[in-house]
Image (cartoon, rainbow, N blue to C red; front, top):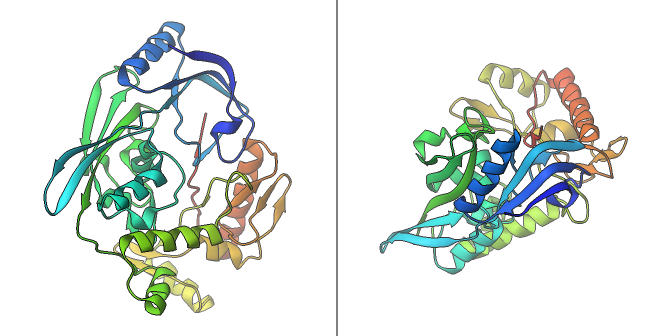
Length: 335
């Protein structure tokens, strides 16, 4: 059992916020986690789960025991001529899983290439990009209760997936450690290029193979999103809001060029466009700034978690004042 006191978390979050954990432990198995949990329970300390740190805002000090699950297993559970069911450890690098699966001839995840983070965080956020959400491929999520230490398995339906949402952000928020995820992937090389800018590229270059499509996604993401090691950031900081048809109609009258995507529950509008139209690209808020090329991204220039949240709040207020839309942030705030 390797539990370290007073550990700097600056290298464990892509915003580069300087933060210290009262205790931290990296575990690679349920057995190791139970040892850490026993220490935490005996010491009266909370357990707080940290993934790849690409979607969190950390305070200056995190009390309790911060646990990072590092298992990188990947096992085939079932296979047919049409598809394959795999179980992947929560500590597996997400982008590596995407590329490994494509190289194996297992398809579906290609639109989700180059998303930072670990597999265990994918169902929490229901990560999505370019018209695809990970919920389309998740069969089961496995984990353990932080309180009772009982293992559990949740079906896709039980995870209550919605746009950037799941049960792990609500009823089970802070209650569980995800240890593995089962994915059902296809052996048919179908591709989804319906979402801009992939549709434009397909019209110009022809329909890509899944591996080629992953390459397109990587190139597009590199062109739009800064690399955290160069400019500390947490990726897209705000969700694309889904508004009612009535609100959308009013906004479209004011902004006829506003891009939009119709949904069953309303109309999704790009948060980046809303922010960009306010002239906030490159806007500086103390040690935090809006990226010069991508209005959804906040860059941290040595600020604290509080500085990041203050900048985000000012952007939310500006969007609310100009469009009447409440923006929601994607990164969760670590307590």
